[in-house]
Image 1 (cartoon, rainbow, N blue to C red):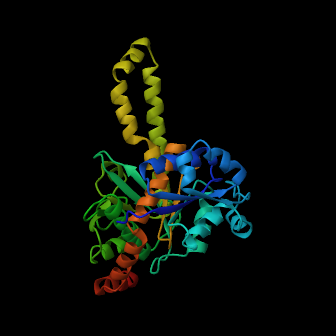
Image 2 (tube, rainbow, N blue to C red):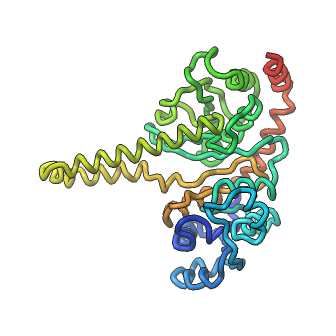
Image 3 (cartoon, helix red, strand yellow):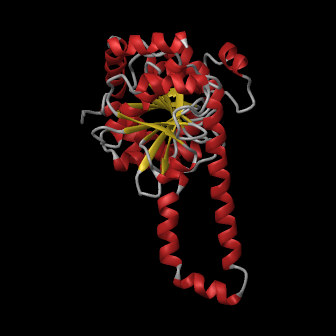
Length: 354
């Protein structure tokens, strides 16, 4: 892990709140990671006034001026064709040109992934990048899950690559010696699931990689914290993520309604205030903000479009941690190691034959 200054390129104009979240978010991240430096990409006439309230941030930041912005409504093809001078593209270019170690944006997810893939390419050996996210568990730990929508259909080798991407993240960022990996399935039995899922499990059980293969897991195992890394295709992962988010919002709404249902319930809420705050802090989605675009030959983190400064700072910090731990270099080494193993080649051939 390196403690030298790390430069992060920020797409200041992306997302619903733009500079109103990005600038104070960067200031919060700087307070937590004083070695950070920033390239603020966007409209200088908007950025300069915002920096006046954050002198410490201003001292460690350079502004790269552009007025072009990729909106949430822009189609991917349009963003690729016309967005060369957009704040998103220019921030990604900073990583490609080695002026920054990572890029963080709250902008259009599809445009960000497509542009980053076009500019940064994939780590050698990785077929396609995946979107990953951290989630809290009942154990008080965190789990990383991927893919969450970048690849709707995945073959066995892609799932194995996702497992390695997630395992290296859990090892480096969570600090786990040998993270456990589970493949999301409709049951834990070996014979269940699609052919690609069974083939991936067969390969994972035979190769040596930085973690340990747990086997198949079911949807309820995600929140239980049964494994540290959850691997699935983008279609299933996105549905699981959105379902979890919806249930979380529903539970929060039910709880508010229950405490407002009567004067006695409201009185009871006062006594429970400290416990409720503790629970809220544990599951605060802002603390887990940041869609990780893993597998790219450069660190790229997608912040939720509507997040506030606290949420954006979380996205910056995870990007900085990935950079300081040399995440991409370690993934490249892990992928190269797996691909040269005889057990991987044999298992891959057997899976293909089936």
